Image (tube, rainbow, N blue to C red; front, top):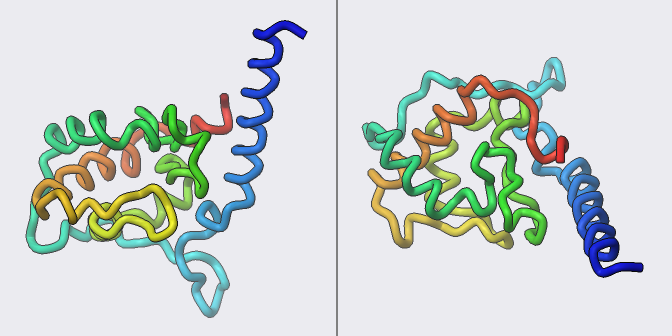
Length: 157
């Protein structure tokens, strides 16, 4: 077997494993606790403002995202950045419907601030101030959560 064929086979196996993991990962299930009466997830209030009365700057948030976050979350927010296939748990896919129903401004602000324990998502409040976190949260909210693009780029690869 040629070196190119082996490389292609290994890449395909890694991608297939990641897709299966992403489909079975509880982070990609219903993100909201279910309503007791209907047992269906409750959508978050997308009109809620940023915490602490902050207003995020989308341009500054995009700049930071493209320098620091895209390697895991991807340029399109689909969780398919160049590092994504080597990370467990897999990075958040902002284009999934569950993400779009749950990730409002306060939730994004808190997730970026605190990170995720036992994952590669850092607690950015250790190096960024609240305004810088609000900038990134606003960019993610406007570009991916409220953006036009539907579905996920991860599954289409």
